[in-house]
Image 1 (cartoon, rainbow, N blue to C red):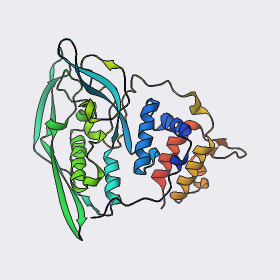
Image 2 (image 1 turned 60 degrees about the vertical axis):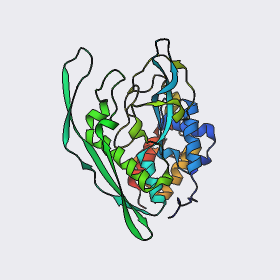
Image 3 (image 1 turned 120 degrees about the vertical axis):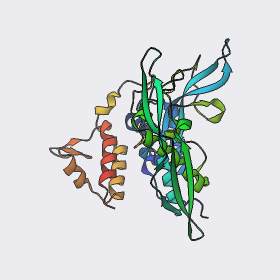
Image 4 (image 1 turned 90 degrees about the vertical axis):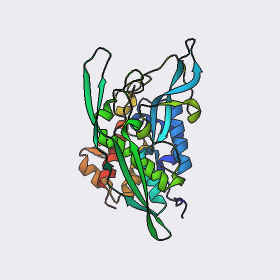
Length: 319
Protein backbone atom coordinates (compact mmCIF):
# COMPACT_ATOMS: atom_id res chain seq x y z
CA UNK A 1 0.00 0.00 0.00
CA UNK A 2 1.08 3.53 -0.67
CA UNK A 3 2.02 5.79 2.18
CA UNK A 4 0.56 9.26 2.33
CA UNK A 5 1.66 11.06 -0.82
CA UNK A 6 4.25 13.78 -0.08
CA UNK A 7 2.93 17.21 -0.97
CA UNK A 8 5.47 19.58 -2.49
CA UNK A 9 3.15 22.54 -3.19
CA UNK A 10 4.08 25.49 -1.01
CA UNK A 11 1.47 26.82 1.40
CA UNK A 12 1.59 30.65 1.38
CA UNK A 13 -0.05 31.01 4.79
CA UNK A 14 2.71 28.97 6.48
CA UNK A 15 5.31 31.28 4.94
CA UNK A 16 3.81 34.26 6.77
CA UNK A 17 5.33 35.73 9.88
CA UNK A 18 3.79 33.72 12.74
CA UNK A 19 2.47 36.79 14.54
CA UNK A 20 0.66 37.91 11.39
CA UNK A 21 -0.70 34.41 10.76
CA UNK A 22 -2.00 34.23 14.33
CA UNK A 23 -3.65 37.62 13.83
CA UNK A 24 -5.35 36.41 10.63
CA UNK A 25 -6.51 33.15 12.20
CA UNK A 26 -7.79 34.79 15.37
CA UNK A 27 -9.86 37.31 13.40
CA UNK A 28 -11.32 34.94 10.82
CA UNK A 29 -10.86 31.20 11.38
CA UNK A 30 -10.65 30.82 15.18
CA UNK A 31 -12.40 33.90 16.65
CA UNK A 32 -12.12 34.04 20.43
CA UNK A 33 -9.53 31.25 20.73
CA UNK A 34 -6.49 31.66 22.97
CA UNK A 35 -3.19 32.45 21.26
CA UNK A 36 -1.53 29.29 22.63
CA UNK A 37 -4.37 27.21 21.16
CA UNK A 38 -3.92 28.83 17.75
CA UNK A 39 -0.18 28.14 17.94
CA UNK A 40 -0.92 24.46 18.54
CA UNK A 41 -3.23 24.43 15.49
CA UNK A 42 -0.49 26.02 13.37
CA UNK A 43 2.08 23.49 14.59
CA UNK A 44 -0.30 20.66 13.71
CA UNK A 45 -0.73 22.09 10.20
CA UNK A 46 3.02 22.53 9.70
CA UNK A 47 3.68 18.93 10.67
CA UNK A 48 1.00 17.58 8.30
CA UNK A 49 1.68 20.13 5.52
CA UNK A 50 -1.84 21.54 5.71
CA UNK A 51 -3.17 25.03 5.06
CA UNK A 52 -4.49 26.40 8.38
CA UNK A 53 -6.74 28.78 6.43
CA UNK A 54 -8.73 25.76 5.27
CA UNK A 55 -9.36 24.85 8.93
CA UNK A 56 -8.32 21.18 8.75
CA UNK A 57 -8.26 21.06 12.55
CA UNK A 58 -10.61 22.54 15.09
CA UNK A 59 -10.11 24.18 18.47
CA UNK A 60 -12.84 22.56 20.54
CA UNK A 61 -13.56 23.86 24.07
CA UNK A 62 -14.09 20.78 26.24
CA UNK A 63 -14.39 19.63 29.82
CA UNK A 64 -11.30 17.53 30.50
CA UNK A 65 -11.31 15.16 33.46
CA UNK A 66 -8.17 16.01 35.41
CA UNK A 67 -7.87 12.67 37.20
CA UNK A 68 -8.25 14.36 40.60
CA UNK A 69 -11.23 14.52 42.92
CA UNK A 70 -12.64 17.08 45.33
CA UNK A 71 -13.24 16.56 49.05
CA UNK A 72 -16.55 14.83 48.30
CA UNK A 73 -14.98 12.34 45.91
CA UNK A 74 -16.35 13.99 42.77
CA UNK A 75 -14.22 14.25 39.64
CA UNK A 76 -12.55 17.58 38.99
CA UNK A 77 -12.73 19.04 35.50
CA UNK A 78 -10.66 21.59 33.61
CA UNK A 79 -12.04 23.69 30.75
CA UNK A 80 -9.49 23.42 27.93
CA UNK A 81 -9.15 24.08 24.22
CA UNK A 82 -8.42 20.75 22.54
CA UNK A 83 -6.91 20.53 19.05
CA UNK A 84 -8.78 17.94 17.01
CA UNK A 85 -8.94 16.99 13.34
CA UNK A 86 -12.20 17.34 11.45
CA UNK A 87 -13.66 14.50 9.40
CA UNK A 88 -12.77 16.63 6.37
CA UNK A 89 -9.08 16.22 7.22
CA UNK A 90 -9.44 12.43 7.25
CA UNK A 91 -10.98 12.67 3.77
CA UNK A 92 -8.06 14.77 2.55
CA UNK A 93 -5.49 12.38 4.00
CA UNK A 94 -7.27 9.40 2.50
CA UNK A 95 -7.29 11.11 -0.91
CA UNK A 96 -3.55 11.81 -0.62
CA UNK A 97 -2.83 8.09 -0.59
CA UNK A 98 -4.23 7.91 -4.15
CA UNK A 99 -6.05 4.76 -3.01
CA UNK A 100 -9.31 6.28 -1.81
CA UNK A 101 -12.18 4.94 -3.95
CA UNK A 102 -15.12 6.71 -2.34
CA UNK A 103 -17.69 5.62 0.20
CA UNK A 104 -21.27 4.44 0.42
CA UNK A 105 -24.26 6.52 1.40
CA UNK A 106 -24.99 6.17 5.13
CA UNK A 107 -27.29 3.28 6.06
CA UNK A 108 -29.48 3.82 9.10
CA UNK A 109 -31.00 1.36 11.53
CA UNK A 110 -34.59 1.45 12.81
CA UNK A 111 -35.84 4.63 14.43
CA UNK A 112 -35.95 4.70 18.23
CA UNK A 113 -37.36 7.22 20.70
CA UNK A 114 -35.42 8.95 23.45
CA UNK A 115 -37.40 10.47 26.32
CA UNK A 116 -35.76 13.18 28.40
CA UNK A 117 -36.20 16.42 30.32
CA UNK A 118 -34.51 19.66 29.34
CA UNK A 119 -34.35 20.59 33.04
CA UNK A 120 -35.34 18.92 36.29
CA UNK A 121 -38.53 20.98 36.42
CA UNK A 122 -39.43 20.72 32.74
CA UNK A 123 -41.92 18.40 31.08
CA UNK A 124 -40.67 15.28 29.36
CA UNK A 125 -40.03 15.50 25.62
CA UNK A 126 -39.05 12.95 22.99
CA UNK A 127 -36.67 12.71 20.05
CA UNK A 128 -36.57 10.12 17.29
CA UNK A 129 -33.13 8.87 16.34
CA UNK A 130 -31.67 6.05 14.22
CA UNK A 131 -30.45 3.16 16.36
CA UNK A 132 -27.25 2.90 14.33
CA UNK A 133 -25.53 4.11 11.18
CA UNK A 134 -23.27 2.16 8.84
CA UNK A 135 -20.79 3.68 6.38
CA UNK A 136 -18.50 1.76 4.01
CA UNK A 137 -15.25 3.25 2.70
CA UNK A 138 -13.50 1.73 -0.31
CA UNK A 139 -9.72 1.54 -0.71
CA UNK A 140 -7.76 0.20 -3.67
CA UNK A 141 -5.46 -2.56 -2.38
CA UNK A 142 -3.18 -4.29 -4.91
CA UNK A 143 -5.41 -3.16 -7.73
CA UNK A 144 -8.66 -4.28 -6.12
CA UNK A 145 -11.34 -2.25 -4.37
CA UNK A 146 -11.65 -3.41 -0.76
CA UNK A 147 -14.49 -2.32 1.51
CA UNK A 148 -14.09 -1.24 5.14
CA UNK A 149 -17.34 -0.78 7.05
CA UNK A 150 -18.10 0.81 10.40
CA UNK A 151 -21.30 0.73 12.43
CA UNK A 152 -21.78 3.32 15.14
CA UNK A 153 -24.67 3.35 17.61
CA UNK A 154 -26.45 6.62 18.32
CA UNK A 155 -26.77 6.13 22.09
CA UNK A 156 -23.03 5.41 22.36
CA UNK A 157 -22.07 8.58 20.49
CA UNK A 158 -24.51 11.41 21.09
CA UNK A 159 -23.45 14.40 23.16
CA UNK A 160 -25.64 15.57 26.02
CA UNK A 161 -26.52 19.14 26.89
CA UNK A 162 -24.69 18.77 30.20
CA UNK A 163 -23.37 16.38 32.82
CA UNK A 164 -26.66 16.58 34.68
CA UNK A 165 -28.99 15.40 31.88
CA UNK A 166 -29.37 12.82 29.12
CA UNK A 167 -30.96 15.41 26.81
CA UNK A 168 -29.04 15.71 23.50
CA UNK A 169 -27.27 18.96 22.83
CA UNK A 170 -28.48 21.38 20.15
CA UNK A 171 -26.70 19.79 17.19
CA UNK A 172 -27.66 16.20 18.03
CA UNK A 173 -31.28 17.33 18.33
CA UNK A 174 -31.17 19.20 15.04
CA UNK A 175 -29.34 16.51 13.03
CA UNK A 176 -29.73 13.10 14.71
CA UNK A 177 -28.89 11.37 11.42
CA UNK A 178 -26.22 13.78 10.20
CA UNK A 179 -24.19 13.66 13.40
CA UNK A 180 -24.09 9.87 13.70
CA UNK A 181 -23.27 9.61 9.98
CA UNK A 182 -20.16 11.76 10.58
CA UNK A 183 -19.10 9.45 13.41
CA UNK A 184 -19.56 6.33 11.29
CA UNK A 185 -17.65 7.88 8.38
CA UNK A 186 -14.72 8.85 10.60
CA UNK A 187 -14.51 5.33 12.02
CA UNK A 188 -14.68 3.77 8.54
CA UNK A 189 -11.90 6.09 7.31
CA UNK A 190 -9.70 5.07 10.24
CA UNK A 191 -10.30 1.41 9.44
CA UNK A 192 -9.51 1.82 5.74
CA UNK A 193 -6.61 4.24 6.22
CA UNK A 194 -5.00 3.59 9.62
CA UNK A 195 -2.09 5.84 8.62
CA UNK A 196 -4.33 8.92 8.87
CA UNK A 197 -4.27 8.52 12.65
CA UNK A 198 -6.42 7.21 15.46
CA UNK A 199 -7.47 10.48 17.10
CA UNK A 200 -11.25 11.08 17.32
CA UNK A 201 -12.58 13.90 15.15
CA UNK A 202 -14.12 17.12 16.41
CA UNK A 203 -17.48 15.89 15.10
CA UNK A 204 -17.23 12.80 17.31
CA UNK A 205 -15.99 14.53 20.44
CA UNK A 206 -17.91 17.81 20.51
CA UNK A 207 -19.74 18.03 23.81
CA UNK A 208 -17.92 15.08 25.38
CA UNK A 209 -15.82 14.83 28.53
CA UNK A 210 -12.35 13.30 28.16
CA UNK A 211 -9.50 12.22 30.39
CA UNK A 212 -6.55 14.57 30.69
CA UNK A 213 -4.01 11.91 29.72
CA UNK A 214 -5.73 11.44 26.34
CA UNK A 215 -4.82 14.86 24.95
CA UNK A 216 -2.02 17.39 24.83
CA UNK A 217 -3.55 20.80 25.41
CA UNK A 218 -2.59 24.17 26.90
CA UNK A 219 -3.14 24.29 30.63
CA UNK A 220 -6.06 26.25 32.03
CA UNK A 221 -7.10 27.05 35.61
CA UNK A 222 -8.76 24.10 37.33
CA UNK A 223 -12.53 24.29 37.82
CA UNK A 224 -14.12 22.29 40.61
CA UNK A 225 -17.04 20.02 39.88
CA UNK A 226 -18.60 18.79 36.61
CA UNK A 227 -19.12 21.51 34.03
CA UNK A 228 -21.45 21.77 31.05
CA UNK A 229 -20.34 19.49 28.25
CA UNK A 230 -21.94 21.58 25.52
CA UNK A 231 -20.83 24.98 26.73
CA UNK A 232 -19.61 27.11 25.10
CA UNK A 233 -19.78 25.89 21.50
CA UNK A 234 -21.39 23.55 18.99
CA UNK A 235 -19.69 22.14 15.91
CA UNK A 236 -21.79 22.35 12.73
CA UNK A 237 -22.41 18.88 11.27
CA UNK A 238 -21.96 20.01 7.67
CA UNK A 239 -18.97 22.34 7.85
CA UNK A 240 -17.27 21.56 11.14
CA UNK A 241 -17.47 25.24 12.10
CA UNK A 242 -18.04 26.23 15.72
CA UNK A 243 -21.36 28.03 15.38
CA UNK A 244 -22.92 28.51 18.82
CA UNK A 245 -21.95 31.03 21.47
CA UNK A 246 -18.32 32.02 21.77
CA UNK A 247 -16.18 30.65 24.62
CA UNK A 248 -16.28 32.44 27.93
CA UNK A 249 -12.70 33.51 27.29
CA UNK A 250 -13.59 35.02 23.89
CA UNK A 251 -11.90 38.29 23.23
CA UNK A 252 -13.78 41.43 22.25
CA UNK A 253 -14.15 42.04 18.50
CA UNK A 254 -10.82 42.99 16.99
CA UNK A 255 -10.75 46.70 16.22
CA UNK A 256 -8.30 45.95 13.41
CA UNK A 257 -10.98 44.06 11.48
CA UNK A 258 -12.08 47.27 9.76
CA UNK A 259 -8.54 48.31 8.91
CA UNK A 260 -7.16 47.76 5.36
CA UNK A 261 -5.97 44.24 4.60
CA UNK A 262 -2.28 43.64 5.24
CA UNK A 263 0.07 43.02 2.28
CA UNK A 264 0.74 39.50 3.56
CA UNK A 265 -2.99 38.75 3.46
CA UNK A 266 -3.29 40.23 -0.03
CA UNK A 267 -0.42 38.03 -1.21
CA UNK A 268 -2.20 34.93 0.13
CA UNK A 269 -5.38 35.93 -1.70
CA UNK A 270 -3.42 36.43 -4.94
CA UNK A 271 -1.82 33.01 -4.59
CA UNK A 272 -5.20 31.40 -3.96
CA UNK A 273 -6.67 33.19 -7.00
CA UNK A 274 -3.89 31.82 -9.17
CA UNK A 275 -4.33 28.28 -7.85
CA UNK A 276 -8.08 28.54 -8.52
CA UNK A 277 -7.53 29.81 -12.11
CA UNK A 278 -9.08 33.15 -11.15
CA UNK A 279 -7.80 36.72 -11.48
CA UNK A 280 -8.06 39.93 -9.52
CA UNK A 281 -10.48 41.13 -12.20
CA UNK A 282 -12.81 38.26 -11.28
CA UNK A 283 -12.53 39.23 -7.62
CA UNK A 284 -13.22 42.91 -8.26
CA UNK A 285 -16.22 42.02 -10.42
CA UNK A 286 -17.70 40.00 -7.57
CA UNK A 287 -16.88 42.62 -4.91
CA UNK A 288 -17.52 45.87 -6.73
CA UNK A 289 -15.74 48.90 -5.41
CA UNK A 290 -13.11 46.77 -3.63
CA UNK A 291 -9.52 45.97 -4.54
CA UNK A 292 -6.45 44.19 -3.16
CA UNK A 293 -4.24 47.11 -4.18
CA UNK A 294 -4.72 50.89 -4.16
CA UNK A 295 -6.69 51.88 -7.26
CA UNK A 296 -8.59 55.02 -8.21
CA UNK A 297 -12.24 54.78 -7.25
CA UNK A 298 -11.77 51.56 -5.29
CA UNK A 299 -11.51 50.79 -1.59
CA UNK A 300 -9.00 48.33 -0.19
CA UNK A 301 -10.42 45.10 1.19
CA UNK A 302 -10.54 45.19 4.99
CA UNK A 303 -8.54 43.00 7.34
CA UNK A 304 -11.76 41.37 8.56
CA UNK A 305 -12.89 40.46 5.02
CA UNK A 306 -10.07 37.98 4.53
CA UNK A 307 -12.11 34.87 5.42
CA UNK A 308 -14.96 35.89 3.08
CA UNK A 309 -12.50 36.20 0.18
CA UNK A 310 -10.99 32.78 0.89
CA UNK A 311 -14.47 31.25 0.94
CA UNK A 312 -15.47 32.99 -2.32
CA UNK A 313 -12.33 31.72 -4.09
CA UNK A 314 -13.00 28.19 -2.86
CA UNK A 315 -16.59 28.24 -4.13
CA UNK A 316 -15.76 29.81 -7.53
CA UNK A 317 -12.52 27.99 -8.42
CA UNK A 318 -12.25 27.16 -12.12
CA UNK A 319 -9.38 24.70 -11.98
